[in-house]
Length: 95
Image (cartoon, rainbow, N blue to C red; front, side, top):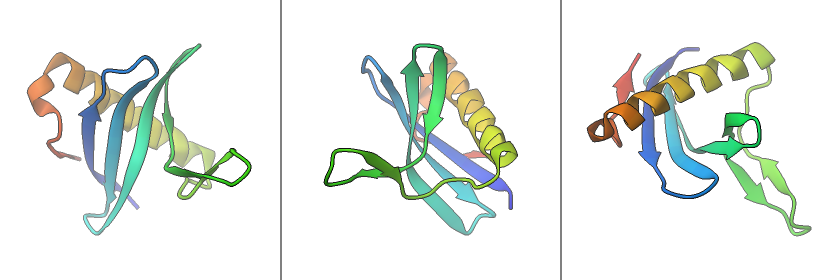
């Protein structure tokens, strides 16, 4: 399974820096990932929903840690490109 498209939409908030949609093999999209500014730098949150007890649960996520790192690396690379060139925002970046 390969990531074939990453779409970044910037946000101007203290912690939430962008919403992200990624496409796999040109046939399956996952929407609602987030680029977050944490205490130790940027990281990517998977799409989640709020539970009745106030906790959040991922609704889609990689099972393999290496694939998670690959996704996060590609997303953060695209995020940095969009920061340098804001007109790329909202446009798919084919891989």
